[in-house]
Length: 309
Image (cartoon, rainbow, N blue to C red; front, side):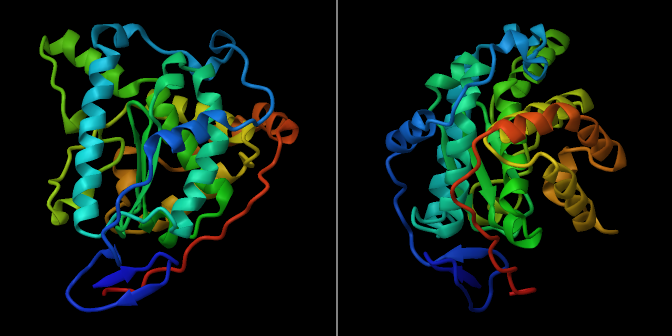
């Protein structure tokens, strides 16, 4: 199998197909990390949500309790982390790529309450899972996870990582899972809570680690376009170049090739139209980026994992 050490080095042994970290590690204090996320001083906040077109939501969320959605998401997230930790697939707190993700989150998350006031009270978390899968997600309540494969296989730069993090956080801020559930309540008369509601990306090969595969929630094209727009805006405010949203989706398309698409592409529409939509937003996004304070730290992607293994 592949073992990833705290330093990010890769060691290969036999009989495993997913990257593992070399120790079973307890997660750092969530409260301290949440405080760092919301306490980071990054200059002027976004204008009031009413003035941000990207923050507009439908009325379907009123059919479902936000508190219940966030509670269920937290339970699913904790279960996932516990299983991943037990299988040595949860990155330790000093892993360089986890530090990278958390630094980028610390720049993006402080803008979140301007779009959704509930986000000020969310216990934001960012974790990295040792999987080859090309995927990332943010559950309701600010529960973020990236898979090592999306960083290593696509060789993402920091701006591209910020585009993904902004996009996935936008789904949570815009309460797309709650909205979709509200539509189900109205159309079917039954509320179905659980893992299927929170699959902002397929949780794939964690099934092999004992968690069980969680069904993914497929958002509408409008949801995806809206999440692209808000994600670009948040990342640009955090000092990340929104033009890298184009290179990100070009890499995603290339990764799909002629075979099965990456997990993100199984639930996230891609292609020339999406890239054109992002390019069309640049007149609005570039002035925001140019006026923003820029990151004082830059990180590189990890090495690609060895084939097979």
